[in-house]
Length: 239
Image (tube, rainbow, N blue to C red; front, side, top):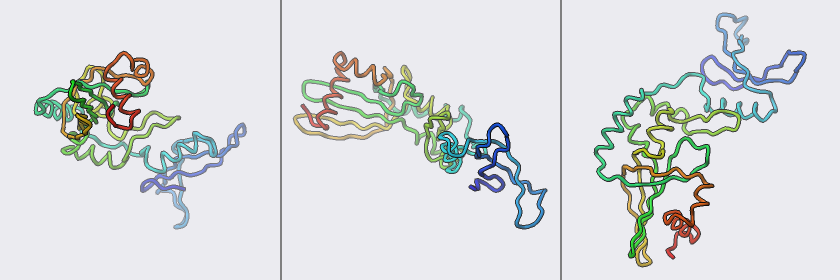
């Protein structure tokens, strides 16, 4: 069995349903009031998480075993706390860079994007990553909750398990079309066969959320996508 906190366990349980005798994984709660002796633990079944040996059952076992699904509800600061941080930080960043993203059609948490600036002398490629750190440095509860989960998970048989609350991961930190957002940005400048790199914290406005399919179709019609494609195909070398 796998103990997850002081009084809850994940165990294999023999299904007594005559119509289906497949064993199942269950979450069970220790009953401290009913103890026959020091070597016996009485458990009360709380929920079934899947059949032993099934794809979904084994997947759910891993999610519970490695704390991806928590028994207790993790605490976070309210959304208003982060909205105030966002407004204050946005005002402190003077430049607004137009960017676009390229992601899967089902994406809800857009966490990176690109910008392309061109002139006769040089090309500047910006890679923009959602600036999460600015929201966490003064948010003890959410920071601790993120440490409990340590990553986001996208399982096939379960809703997305976000490391951060949805009002961050799918809203204030998500580079959604027609919104202003905060990013940590890296700029690659190609000029006269030379490449320089510059880092800064940015504010950006997202002009387009491309799907992979849309981006492929628009490569010949969009200078920005065309340049990105050419640089990617040349391993970063100028052309």
